[in-house]
Image 1 (cartoon, one colour):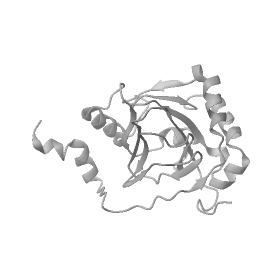
Image 2 (spheres, one colour):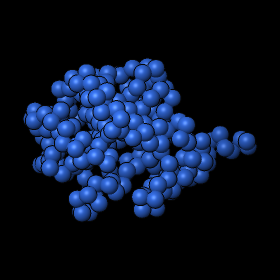
Image 3 (cartoon, helix red, strand yellow):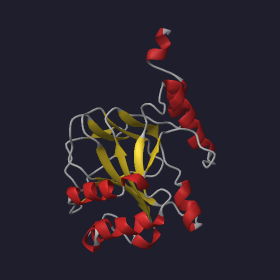
Image 4 (cartoon, one colour):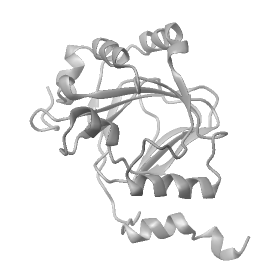
Length: 220
């Protein structure tokens, strides 16, 4: 391995092409604090465990965007593989899960985040210790295919279980740790981010993708 590879590679070249600069701050405040009973979500996962899919971060024929495919290919070159990017997922291909998640979230929480529950895709993600979601940005292909629109949706990350050893969410230069159950962060469009679990218990996250109802910051 030559010394140049310790500081630069094809992925860092991609970031440079997109003018990504970690020295330029992006404000990523806590958007909302949902009232979440994480034990309800743990029980739901336990009851529906066999309905989930264990999926790695790999190239898929269902992904059409060239930018997304390139991100996945470059991550694979760096060593990300089915051995270290697995997550158990619900809601990806089962509309019934989305309806159940809406009920678990509850009307009070929907008011807090100002997202239209009629235009959402919701995924429940369980990352086991030693698994990571590599650096990427989202093109929202599944959402746009589902709702047949070119409108750019809003992506929220809801942290279900309390922060524990080795858990993190990084949005641009902002590294999020020490969260409480129910903390909500907005991941701005075309902002690079990653997350991981270098700890000892699963990291549980809910992603909500949908259209805003008015000002996202004008929460109830």
